[in-house]
Length: 461
Image (tube, rainbow, N blue to C red; front, side, top):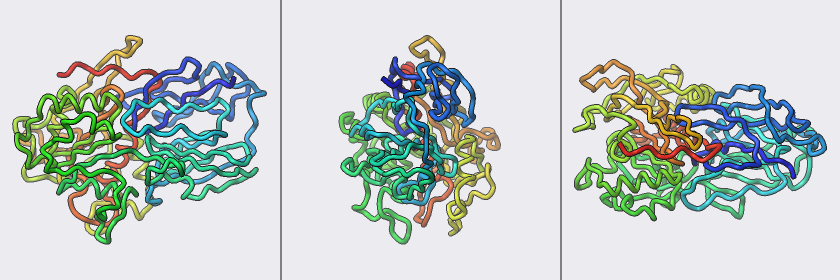
């Protein structure tokens, strides 16, 4: 039997579970979680030997010992090289940190509901890599017919059967891009997404531009083409009062203004807050923006303090120059092609990184907190917010020049929650502006897998 290696799916879904037969070395990433490192299959020739491992958390190569490596007889040396780029479903946006591998068997399908995903398991002689900041990859492989080329980022999963020739193989973009539809028969899976149909902050337009729908000449979703479900913002929150309905989705968006006409807003009923916690604990991804901050504060109160909590919304909105605080996000933004860095039309651009203009902030975060729990070995784990973007709250009356967290994500059981003080898509336009790109990066990145059962949920504060 060939030993198995646990490979992070680098996913939207947080993964849980463990495998006593698996080989992995634990590294660290953002303050929200730990990520297993990836043993290199090309340098392993004998059991228990030193392997090159790639620390997914910081992208640095290190040397370490991994038990259970392949014996020399188990490994066929690579005689081919696959080269290509992983793009979003729209075939325009490069995807960093996507898992790319070649196998003799099909990938496991993505469950059709919220779940606590396990890390991808590959045999120790498998050929795999992670894409660079610009989405490119070079993958050593063994030539052969009928190979499965698998590309995965969370619940975005493509499995294409290809023939690998000896020597150089250029993979066409339409064989390595993230899929834009749920079509298991064709080897394609995407996240099940529900998004409130709000105005402004039309997040559904961002998803369409990513490739999950068709886009009009003005840059808006063409109704009926969306490959996600729209929830009417007139439902008074009834969708969130039904945990069974929520559990049909991997990601749920509650954008700014979803609640502006709801009776009782900004209050959140206790059972609704509990449903949100239960959904996220099961592996769901929960996203809210500025005006809807009560849908972060009520279910997860110990993670952050909002400015003026009695009336958290700021009027009028403020625009500021913020800073990209996460190094991997910064590297990805810097690596984007010029056409994506500046879409024109009076929109902000990405030519002053790490500074970035952030428009239409309707709230402020006073502070974010460490949230410490113990894992199954009794070690302290901080599941509190990781900060992606910072900036001043110029409309706050206290310390308006002080830089604060403006886009954050935290862990709760097997899932994650996200929040930004700024809207993401309030005015129709072609292309994706900087804060829309930040949104897309966050929803693709927050679901790093667990190399063992996820930390328990903290007590509700």
